[in-house]
Length: 299
Ligand SMILES: [Zn+2]
Image (cartoon, rainbow, N blue to C red; front, side):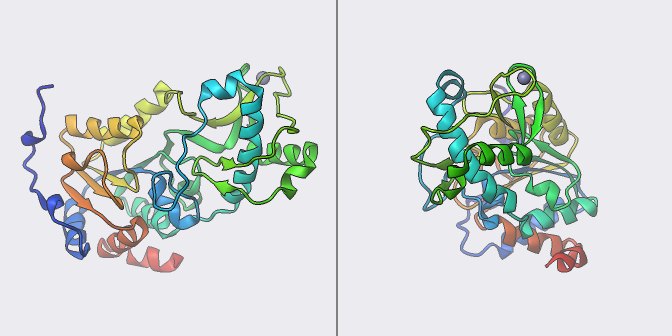
């Protein structure tokens, strides 16, 4: 690789310890002012909506189910659907938080040009964001792996409840950010299949071990390339598909700014780094950029 971060005329503000982020906020406001800002979001954007972060503090550490496990073993599918069914009710009732709303307000004000999200919770759209790429799919759809038929998740949840009435009575499970939950009692579960071809169905999300569809990735990379600044919010960038988009910015010499609690894989590439809660920083940023009224309206 011939390009290095030394080619950027970036200062090293990000190296300063973040005891208070108000000073960094001022820098962030200057960087994005008058610019087209692409945004890459991760689980840290949705924690304030009650959806946990895999890598956050106090969270059960476990690996998500792989696509190979799901496809090859009925027991895995039973466990997945039992857990995912419980997780779905929490996801379906989660509300966008001030971070989502601030991003929607910034888009309405012409500052944010598009959002690429690693989250599968649909909360950006529900907050009013118009230009959203679901990099890892969306939990509110279910797709047949054989014929491609798509189903509404709410309707499928109703069917699962009807066919497995004991499921809704099970004790509340620990929710994971992919909408899965840890359940122990799933042996009796009737796994849903496709009405059209009887094939396997799965939530329309990218499972561990699957790749982001090429066209989705291209759309996401295009949003980044056409922007002046890439803002990463609430992601440690541990997942490769997210980190690759930071690399797209780097190759296009687009400055990268990061808001995240804790370290990220791209800290060394960041023009500015704010170690703080996403909702707080984005709400203050929106105010500082003069979309104050929009943010006030939704509070
Ligand atoms: Zn089918």
